[in-house]
Image 1 (cartoon, rainbow, N blue to C red):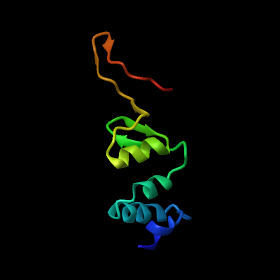
Image 2: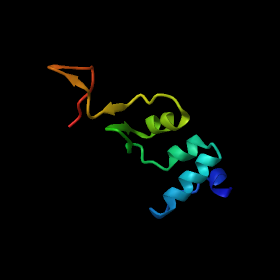
Image 3: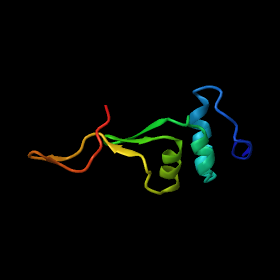
Image 4: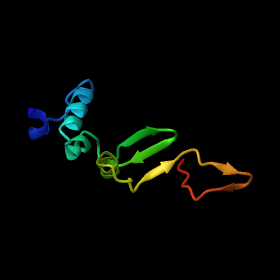
Length: 87
Protein backbone atom coordinates (compact mmCIF):
# COMPACT_ATOMS: atom_id res chain seq x y z
CA UNK A 1 0.00 0.00 0.00
CA UNK A 2 1.19 3.51 -0.71
CA UNK A 3 1.07 4.85 2.84
CA UNK A 4 3.59 2.27 4.15
CA UNK A 5 6.12 3.31 1.54
CA UNK A 6 5.54 7.05 1.62
CA UNK A 7 4.75 7.19 5.36
CA UNK A 8 1.80 9.43 4.62
CA UNK A 9 1.07 11.57 7.68
CA UNK A 10 -2.37 11.63 9.25
CA UNK A 11 -3.92 14.91 8.16
CA UNK A 12 -7.22 14.29 9.93
CA UNK A 13 -7.86 12.36 13.18
CA UNK A 14 -10.08 9.96 11.22
CA UNK A 15 -7.04 8.95 9.14
CA UNK A 16 -5.26 7.51 12.17
CA UNK A 17 -7.13 4.23 12.43
CA UNK A 18 -6.79 3.47 8.72
CA UNK A 19 -3.07 4.29 8.69
CA UNK A 20 -2.33 2.41 11.90
CA UNK A 21 -4.15 -0.72 10.72
CA UNK A 22 -2.59 -0.70 7.25
CA UNK A 23 0.91 -0.26 8.71
CA UNK A 24 0.28 -3.00 11.26
CA UNK A 25 -0.77 -5.39 8.49
CA UNK A 26 2.42 -4.49 6.59
CA UNK A 27 4.45 -5.06 9.80
CA UNK A 28 5.74 -1.48 9.45
CA UNK A 29 6.60 -0.79 13.11
CA UNK A 30 8.51 2.40 12.29
CA UNK A 31 5.55 3.67 10.28
CA UNK A 32 3.17 2.90 13.14
CA UNK A 33 5.38 4.80 15.59
CA UNK A 34 5.68 7.72 13.16
CA UNK A 35 1.96 8.41 13.68
CA UNK A 36 2.69 9.46 17.28
CA UNK A 37 4.13 12.74 18.54
CA UNK A 38 7.60 12.44 20.17
CA UNK A 39 6.16 12.76 23.70
CA UNK A 40 2.91 10.88 23.10
CA UNK A 41 1.27 8.77 25.80
CA UNK A 42 -0.35 5.47 24.80
CA UNK A 43 -2.92 3.96 27.19
CA UNK A 44 -2.25 0.22 27.12
CA UNK A 45 -5.18 -0.60 29.40
CA UNK A 46 -5.08 -1.99 32.91
CA UNK A 47 -3.65 1.26 34.26
CA UNK A 48 -0.52 1.06 32.11
CA UNK A 49 0.79 3.90 29.99
CA UNK A 50 3.63 3.89 27.50
CA UNK A 51 5.42 7.23 27.29
CA UNK A 52 7.18 8.57 24.19
CA UNK A 53 7.39 7.57 20.53
CA UNK A 54 10.42 5.29 21.00
CA UNK A 55 8.75 3.38 23.85
CA UNK A 56 5.59 3.07 21.75
CA UNK A 57 7.70 1.78 18.84
CA UNK A 58 9.28 -0.80 21.17
CA UNK A 59 5.83 -1.85 22.36
CA UNK A 60 4.66 -2.41 18.80
CA UNK A 61 7.88 -4.26 18.00
CA UNK A 62 7.12 -6.69 20.81
CA UNK A 63 9.89 -5.53 23.13
CA UNK A 64 9.30 -4.25 26.60
CA UNK A 65 9.15 -0.45 26.44
CA UNK A 66 11.71 1.43 28.50
CA UNK A 67 9.29 4.10 29.74
CA UNK A 68 6.23 2.25 30.95
CA UNK A 69 4.42 3.24 34.14
CA UNK A 70 2.05 1.20 36.26
CA UNK A 71 -0.53 3.71 37.48
CA UNK A 72 -2.12 1.32 39.94
CA UNK A 73 0.62 -0.65 41.71
CA UNK A 74 -0.51 -3.60 43.73
CA UNK A 75 -0.03 -2.79 47.40
CA UNK A 76 -0.08 -5.29 50.22
CA UNK A 77 -0.53 -3.65 53.61
CA UNK A 78 1.93 -0.75 53.68
CA UNK A 79 4.24 -2.31 51.07
CA UNK A 80 4.12 -1.43 47.42
CA UNK A 81 6.37 -2.74 44.70
CA UNK A 82 9.08 -0.62 43.10
CA UNK A 83 6.79 1.48 40.98
CA UNK A 84 7.07 5.05 39.77
CA UNK A 85 4.26 7.38 40.65
CA UNK A 86 3.82 10.23 38.21
CA UNK A 87 1.44 13.05 39.01
